[in-house]
Amino acid sequence: MNARCQLIIVGLTGVLALALVLPVIIVCRDWAFIDRNTGSRKGYREWFLLWRTGSWHHVSALETFMRSKHPGQFQQKWISYAGTGRDIFGQARLFGHGRPGPIVMLPPEILDSYCRLASETEQRRLYDLFSGGEREKIQSEVDRIYQAVLSDRGRKAEPSGSVIGSQPIRSATNGASSAAGSRH
Image (cartoon, rainbow, N blue to C red; front, top):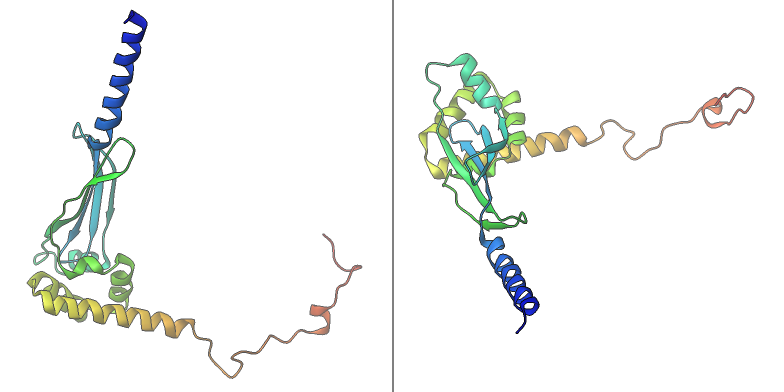
């Protein structure tokens, strides 16, 4: 076998080895955490050399309330809910996370909408319930919050009055095209 054939075989073997190895090498991990007590969320992307990028943080309305009204009793309990490892091609290859409980199923915008309408007493009760950690009670509350916010949004979307389904009345000047009076 001549040197050129050997070089081609070595090159193809190298390419094949890279094609088999690169997809299983985890180059970064997307981390996300939720505060079990308030529903606040944060996260970042961690690269294989422990370099972090893409940090983000959503402070919930419940956390804002607790920090401003009850700072002495406020505590956070951050729990991982996503730890997705990605290969060089961006494909998810590794999954790992904690068990934050039912609060993770409550989208931040739903919780924030609820807290904006809730009284201070209700917000404090909600914080105490979440921080108590009783899974069944928290799940019931999450379901109740969902229903309250979604039904409130549904009421706001419905038209009111006796003109439901009717069209607006057009005046003679509103519906007529006036070439002399319009300037484009």
